[in-house]
Length: 232
Image (cartoon, rainbow, N blue to C red; front, side, top):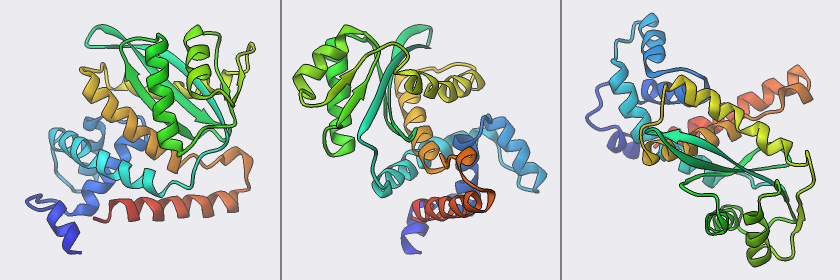
């Protein structure tokens, strides 16, 4: 409890309210103003600006804890990149997911050349603590260069439609970006997508694949993991 008191020192709201606000923002397509209204309905008066500051400060801390506790990713990575506008300029959002749909990493870069691909692949090795057995990409030539230099023993599949899983995984981020109106800086955007990915992985429970009873058990376990990650 002493750690929690130090982390939340000088915050007039209890930690449980801060934790809940951060969870709402990264779990659902809600704005800071939406969360302000949801809390007000419960008799909690807090400004959307305070909620924004909570998300900026505590979100990355929670995400780091969630990543450390993650059980590990599969052996197949589906990799894709899409362009996003940040402060009116075109940037590229690189994303890798495994065969279960968990986000291995998401990284913003200004280019999508071979140098950028190699930088992203090095992050994947670090985050996964090793090389994947197989990678699936589109036909961007930069992937071939990075594969030959960094994943030479991994199978590389770039056939048509094989990478749909990764392309579809961008949808949740695109929806959130629209809800945020616009991304103002690379730092802000990277911070958000990193926390969003960690929270997404925690609650990526495959609801359509399991029974209602089993889903409720998985959801309860996810809530316990969230409580542990936020209990500083």
